Image (cartoon, rainbow, N blue to C red; front, side, top):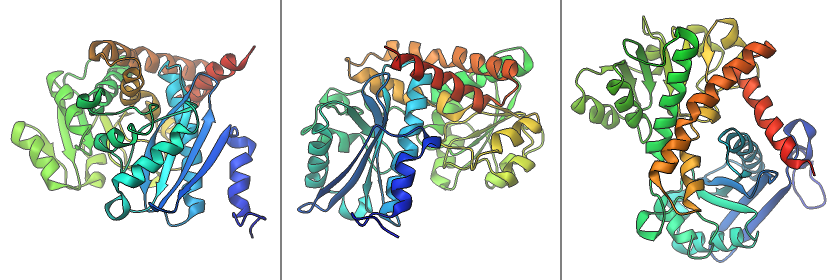
Length: 363
């Protein structure tokens, strides 16, 4: 069933339904000459211009692309609020296989669409887009971040993302074991790509015993060549069942925590860099019921967005690292709120973020 525009009715329902908090603005973009089809979703500008990346992905349908933009932009509102940034949440998705249709002309056309929003949305990298792409987009849009150092940007944000996750782990250790160190703890890292391999360095420097896995053999080999003391698990299923595991760090795809994986977990803490780790509502309660401490993903992986936000004001690494260090205190505050309210940490983080956004909306 479709409406008068031909859009599926369920897409429009998703757009306005109250349980997602509503979205301020959703823009459909099309440029026939370049083949660009994109959706830009602004969930909230209560704290400032919406900030979020551009995902370039071959969605199965336009409805799936819209739904992803809505969900991702909402998530960015919460991430930016918890990171203490003066930014709301936004996200853009470009529909199509980037390996097949991404061109300079398409990215320039996309930049013009972002620019037409007049600064209400600031774009950056996400799945399928990279620093070099943002350099191109920036030629048509000054509200672009995540650019290369050669073009006035900060470059790769994975370093600070990993550092923030490490701070979240330290806070988890403080809360659970009374000491903010990973020394002597066994940590399993699933995914040792851009972020994961930096996280491994922090863990080893802090004295942790590290177990890794990755679907890409070359990523594992890069880690083990540098650090032969690192143990390798055959796959994620084997990793989460590792005997004596203290902390599990999902650093690859989303949805890592589902009914099956939560039931099999041997770790007492989950803290990783992957986005959208909870496969469905209710998983956070399942973790709590098993006495597994969950550090909300959008809180601990905020180092990257802290970096790209700082770039808008003239990037300073030391300033960004100081801000990312505060993820330690923020994570502890979430655990304290969860205990006080008798709710899982994921729900506590949502409450704190919603409170900050609500207070910003007051006259």
